[in-house]
Length: 179
Length: 179
Image (cartoon, rainbow over all chains, first blue to last red; front, side):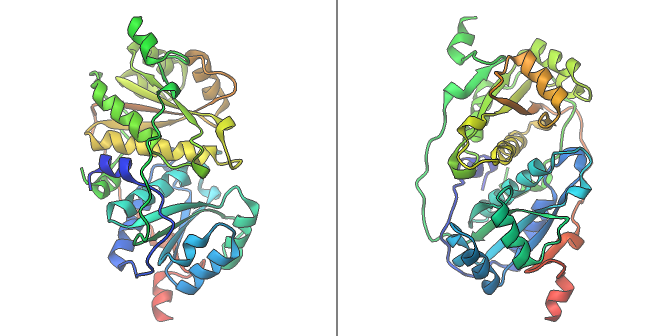
């Protein structure tokens, strides 16, 4: 799939067929995660691959609004590892870039995926930390549920030119053309 | 370019040829930005397109380590708009996902790009706010410098299996296989 098509057509998928994701596909996802950009190339992250249905079910039952985990065959937890940071305060952005790369990789191989935000929701961080035994020095950041899609969401046009400015705030396209 | 290839081969580019990026390419970048995922689909962002060389030069001279702006023909500022947020605390992740999408779109059309982090660096936020007249209610989050690449960085393998866990923290692949 072309990268621009992937960027334009990706949607959140929240219902899956629980069919095993091939190991070579999981490997590809992990390689993509490690290629994500990070501030000063600090790579402040670690990952937990979850492919056991009982573990996915336990996570899905322990958190509200996480039913997607009850049908997903695969989850990948992105954990922040702030001790690795080189420029203070950038780890949420770094981990978010990795999460987005994973969503796009899943879409690119024809799977669906959805970003389950954990940080900064204390209950969710605590639940995932306990179930997956994540040490206190790391932060459960986002859990990406992945699998063959069992729904087809409607694509929505979100383009909003009123939020695009040209060379300075408040200068919109029509203004710029009259300059 | 295939999306998986794009994810694997993207690198930061910090030296450009200052040749105008065609308007239809800029339009594509803006469309891609608005397709980024965000918590509860809040889209807490606005964008400033910078294609005036004098504005790019002023930004590049006003901030340390921002020489990339002195050769880039295009910059896109991602501004956080926290008032649009629906779930508190997620806007840095949402804006970071948009930044990553833009880097990938630039790579996908054969251009280079680099993510210049602004938030949470107070000096940088203030400088960009002043030069681009960003209102106090918004937060200059990241500036992406884009253009035809004038350097070819070496690709680095960053894969690190010691940071991959299976179904629980500390369970690595060799352990998992013996279960």
